[in-house]
Length: 213
Image 1 (cartoon, one colour):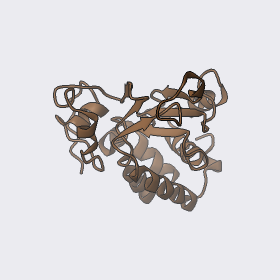
Image 2 (tube, rainbow, N blue to C red):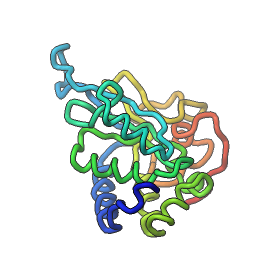
Image 3 (cartoon, rainbow, N blue to C red):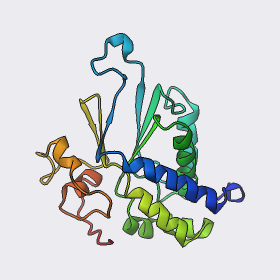
Image 4 (cartoon, rainbow, N blue to C red):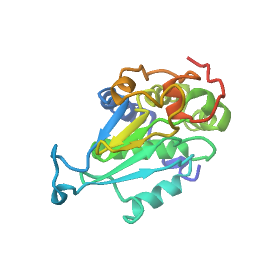
């Protein structure tokens, strides 16, 4: 990594992961995102911008471009929420830098960052597409284990203003008729199992068996 010499020490990464882990445990499976603090907002009160960010796949410079350009994303804040819609890691060679940056930003702007889980926030995909090897090169297996536990805390969907449903995958036979309340009672703190609502929301149209537990 070009920034390999500047990676933070392992303890700091683990501390940031633990802090985010605790916050994520309080989130429902389908996280609500409001553009206003009011229950019944008037047009003047809708001041929070919400930006949905697609797959980063280890491209750290893409993240920097998004954060540095207000017209694209801008820095998260109380009035600028960024929803990262899964697939942060794998394929590119700077997935670790992306996660550390998001952990740091989330720690200082708790209301400005929401991370949803995609199919590449799973151990099987990480083993196949490069994230596991990257973490072991830059840190060690304990950090990898903590990243995988952290991934399991990510909500697998969000709803913006009770009207826009956001997920990495989609709605398929096992999920398309479920209510938000029904999705919220599912257990998400695990690896996804094929032919289940959680799997569909993370990975629409796919059938690769993800059997790790």
